[in-house]
Image 1: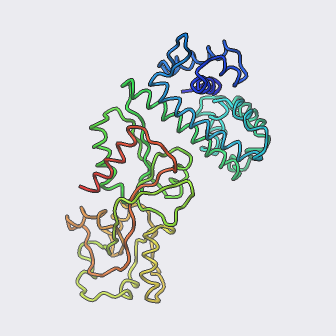
Image 2: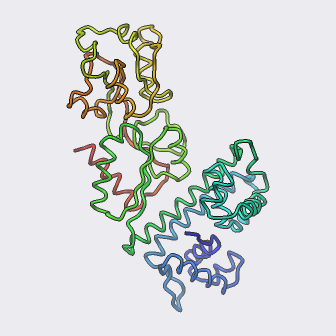
Image 3: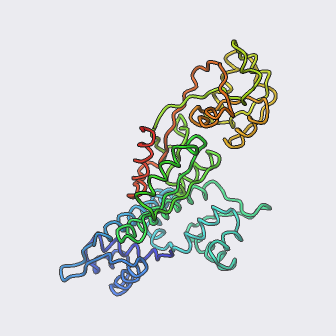
Length: 396
């Protein structure tokens, strides 16, 4: 849905002042322009935001829900302006006031796709139109945003940081739309979950199915992939939460984490593995076997490396680094490789005797499993319900 940012600003000003007259003065528009903007916004949202009377403009329930989100959305852009320009700059208010929805969409899409042509296709714009829109936005920003490169578009660090604020602007607006639609019972809302390996097997699927019993129309998407990619998606507002093994120390100051339970790793191999008959395994025995090891820079990898370093031994020479539980299980079942896997994650394979747990005591292998959220994030009704159900699944 393409909204008009100026109409949004008008609605927020009317909500705060209670009158069209004062709002028009604050946004430097005529009263008729503000009135027309409010009507256009209500038509796009298919909802009445204000009750009009001789005493002024009063918010409806839908108006309170949506414009609360709108105010939070523009707070992100104001923070972006303070960060992008000098703190004492006089540009802040005019920059926010002159931004258009089309400019923000074009900028955000190029940052996401890393390509002008891909961004134009996804926005259903011609490339000349996209470039003109980006040029206008760049002029407002008073600095270059992108550079051409052989691979497509080179996106500097400052530009990526700016795109995070823009992504959070859109996330807040989308949450506002969801809350209004839920109020009208036209749609339950959206939920975007970043899912790390352990959460994929039981916790998240069970919570999703329970959520759909309460909200059959909920629009749910589950994304997996490397932690670093999912963390960036969370920070940019593309994900609502990240479920799985938590990171310590916190990977970013804008992230908060909630622990659901502590999980332990087990030494796992295929059923019938030669080491299953051994009653006195040593780390040296494990060091001579090939492994399927966790990916680097993960909590499980830290445990794997510590097993050998504490005995003064180098890592095994034959290692397949793998972050996919499906692939790891497949490799283990078809070879004599060993792996450190969460007990909860392979309980089905252990019960069916396709995999087996070796008799080897591992020390200090506990990892905190839970979810990460953006600091100061406010969930919609559906998103809050999912978090409650997630905690219920762990407790059951």
